Image (cartoon, rainbow, N blue to C red):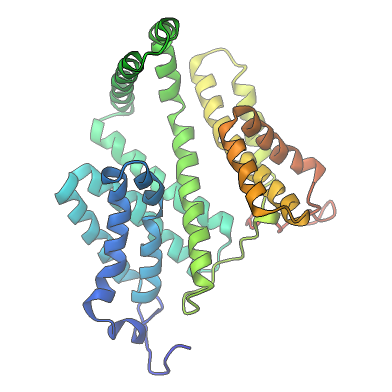
Amino acid sequence: MMPASSSTASGGAPTGMYLRGGILNWVAAPLLSALLFLSALFVPVLGSLFNPFAPLPIIYYAFTHGTPAAAAAVLGVAGIIGLLTGFKAGALYLFSYGLAGLIMAGMIRAGRTFTSTVLAAAAAAMTVTALLAVAGEGSIAALYAATLAGMKGVMAETIAIYEKAGMPAEQITMLKENGDAIILWVVRSLPGAMTVIYLSAMFMNYAAYAALQTRWFWLPAAAPLDLNRWSPPERTVFIFIIGGGLMLVPGDAARAAGINLLIVTLALYFMAGLCVMRHWFERGRLPRFLRWTIYILIGLQPFMIAGTAGLGLFDLWLDFRKIRRAKGEKEDTNGSDT
């Protein structure tokens, strides 16, 4: 239990729990956040797995030291990262990871649902980062051109690596002939892909915080996250339909908008499909080894990924888990405010 002598700092922090820890308790969480962020730059492969969790120590810090202290810590860490690795990296940490952590802490403290917390943090971080990227290049057109040029460089390097690796000549020729078209649509699909990345990162941080809170009882409880019953808000299907319709409209701009909408909505329905499968696995008491084998196979097979997304989409109508209420009642089983 929390000591009776503990007081509450700004933002609801139990001061008695960290003052006795000395300076280490003040710097441990921000330092961990910085290390998680920098792991993507200095730790091959594994760093990309650790990096998305950089907001988590900031969420913890906001609850143990108060929101003002957490905001100051974010600014300090961003400054240090900027000095070590460059201004752009420091700005990325500040306006993506740090901002997301502060927003998630505020939403959790306010008792908001899982869906609204993840959406708010992802939307704010991604929007601010995108605006700064545009400002850095001067305009959206300049940012688009710079991204396109960068992707062409990546494609050239990739082809060179494939040639050295002994890839068949006909495949190399195909890449060279179609490289510009591939690059063009990869760049046009980046908004949707980045949206999925931000949503996934915020989901992982929320789930990790919820797991920590069950052990560290002094942290505020997050809204329940029952993956067996989660599904996207029902109105997501209209975004999916609009995206599919735009893909049929002549013109690159309409098709680019359509493919980005489809990327985001299909990613949500893929997650819903995994939740349906998880429900079935637990109901059938499937051994964990078999569960993870199936998950890995799904991740390796594009057709299985598409099938899982279809499962999540059709769950809207077929209700495989029987989680929706009678028609006409407001549904609140999916952790959504909508």
